[in-house]
Image 1: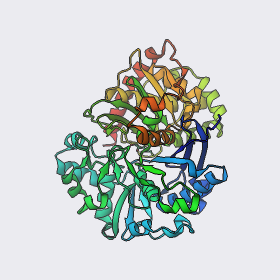
Image 2: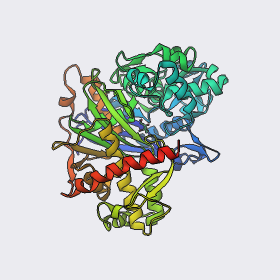
Image 3: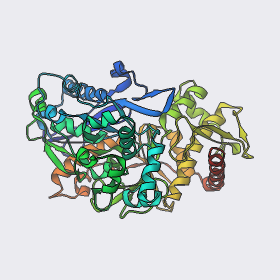
Image 4: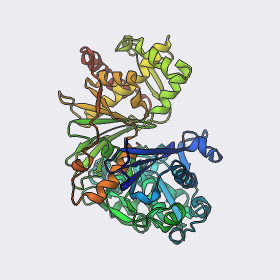
Length: 532
Ligand SMILES: O=C(CO)[C@@H](O)[C@H](O)CF
């Protein structure tokens, strides 16, 4: 697509497995995309799926924050090699995996403000972290901290009313509280705490960047109505926490010009503006330009469902976040930890690692899978809080294995989507004649899998031109933030193609899957009882 050589915008996404960049022109057409895959491109950090998890502590999941710094060094060099003219970049925004926290050590602010352009970032920031390992969203080791917070604030419902969620183990507040309680020296040596999103923004502005309202909603610390930290909860988690977090900003706040480090080292224009970074799921909402009757289904390392809310609502499970493009609106989100890595495990065990064979096996079994249904939780799932493989036959008797690979594959895919529909309906998503499911994320390129999604939800499934709506949303946010005074978000993004209809449900879908939804609810209740 012809480039008009006008201003360009950049989006960054620091996700679980990689750091991605996209460059778009004035009309938001994609000009370049690049990424750094942590496992393959930075093997010295010895991550698997971008994380470090030890067998003896399966609930503790972390990532080396210096790996993320080095990934930015590498990504900018890759973009320079593929010909991006950094001098044309008018604005950069970005996003990151939600809930993860970075602990900057004392003096790092000064270090950030004085970066030397003739050295790599990672060389200059190697000693800038009070702990080299950042807890991330896959961690589930803060059960005790969650209980302390909920008990102290008046219960799960009260916490959800204030912060948009009951206490969740992966959320930043419980994680910070765990650091304070179990590693007081680290907390004492911490000058600033960033989210993954504001951490990347800090690297780009050459100072500590504020946390935005949308990603900040995933911390159990922010009052989502006042958009301010909730002092009582800060005090419950750790002392002097407000000063370590800094103040919060709107998700489209123009933070500052890019640090001189990038002007000197990469040739960025000194007027290039850095816009607040946000969470990957809020950025996906931007990238998908979600409409009122849409349900977004992001099929990535985590699978998430999210939708636009005009006002907050109380949820027993799931989350309400501040909206990233409308300060008066909100978004609802459900997160399922066992997403692509679990699909890949069953692909490897049942289809020899081949997606083509996986799809053939899936296609060779009928909707409803002869009554078989299963749940596969490699890591402790968020909703429901269970771990392990749970296979059931048509009589709802638990069995250890299925007789055929075809049944195993379909039971994985149907089970993942039946769980999603059950919990989506529990949080108030109403499937109606105008419902659309907009699929994004790596698995949204697999039409065979999306057909099952369409059947289980009895709704049409649409996909976007590109699978990574988060990094695109970040690029859209960069332009939106700089032009919102003269143009609405819709006007700014109206040149982008509408989502494409990919799958529609079979006529018998609801008659097959509604009974399976009821079975799912009964099975979950039984499993939770057995595991309580
Ligand atoms: O925990 C999550 C959302 O609440 C995940 O979707 C992470 O953001 C994935 F990076």
